[in-house]
Length: 583
Image 1: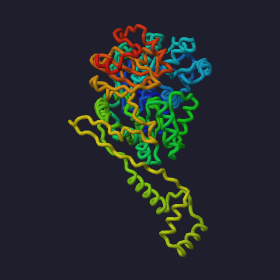
Image 2: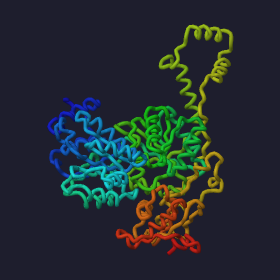
Image 3: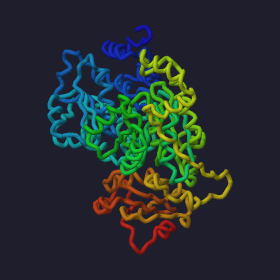
Image 4: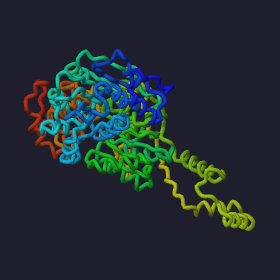
């Protein structure tokens, strides 16, 4: 392989696998980890999403797995553990390593929630060389004795920042403590926040930071666009954005499973080929959804953040954020589902006028330059539809249906006997082609720098009949909490949630992302169980879904050594959130 001169650092079987895959060059992060100076060192790998980190991890592991292929089954337990935050990422990592180590015929298994633990135990009994798993399920197998750890030579934490955000710190610590002390510990992520750094310092030895791209650099193949819309116009705005390039694949990110269900239903009613992906789906259903989207059967995938990590589908041209995410890291990972492997993509973020400040802060923290643009108008989209149809009918090439002699004879007769314009109009009306009608969306007035924040007008606050369920819920939205005076804080009562008081506020360094991580860890709940978050100077108020509120209250009141000064308790009925946040 003249174009891949790495035979001195890559084994012959890996070179063969890469050649068979059709690669004729390596990405910057893949080249960086092959530096001979990094041999046998613990690594902290950072690179932009879609840059080939999983294959780079495989390169790093080749020394740990360096046994003759004929002896690849001599281990009685795994040689490598790879810990990931989501089922989707587990499947992606397993798939990538399967082809990469195909010549070695290593056993590679994944263990994740949502699958049969009995089937997983049977697979683990075959002593796979590499195990990829989510923290909770992996720890479950370790405690059951399904996985022997004495021969583990390396462990990889992929997307460690996401696992900490999801409240898995204790699980990660328990897993790492159960492994041999002389192992290698590698961490890989598109970002490397302070929390991950502290975790790395505790469990890595003399680690080296390896960058495929400079830390904080974003994917230059992604264009970032912000669309300011009225709350009731979000659904119509998404319809128009999907109609810009209707034949290309798009992913729409929503915050909650309820939003995913509603959005998927309404887009299907509008005529879009759409499928959904969210956390409550069983693994077989998730696999089927991703497979059909990957094949192009469906052009639109609506998903919660569960898909932001680990969804690797080349050719996704557009990401649409129904709501701004809570933090910069989440935005980077969501957006990273497009612009992969050198392809161009667009990330579009919808925001109501009151959320502009949060979005500016979000983009600044992510190091992203963005443009503010209006939603495409119905008139411009109708004109584009007409142009596509004209181009399709006026060109004789690339036609799906080839005219027959019968068609030719009939066409000549019609042109001879009928008015041509009238004829074409009637034929266009009869063809079996239904175009999705674009929506009329009015762009709201956006406040200029230095002007007083404007309140939404009564009209913009009114829910439209077709987009009501997608109105801005303002959940996890730090734009109206951090840095906001208590007198301006408003918490809308929600009968489906219970309110809790947290003795941690902005003056002590609280922000929405950190607060969400703490309450999820302390209360043993998931992020989608949390509703509104409002942060005051010295304390905060959060909402927790009523179905888990009682268990959350019991778990959260237990003393916590990590944050002994932070107390979480149900908000008393006689205390208003405004008064609490003013303290």
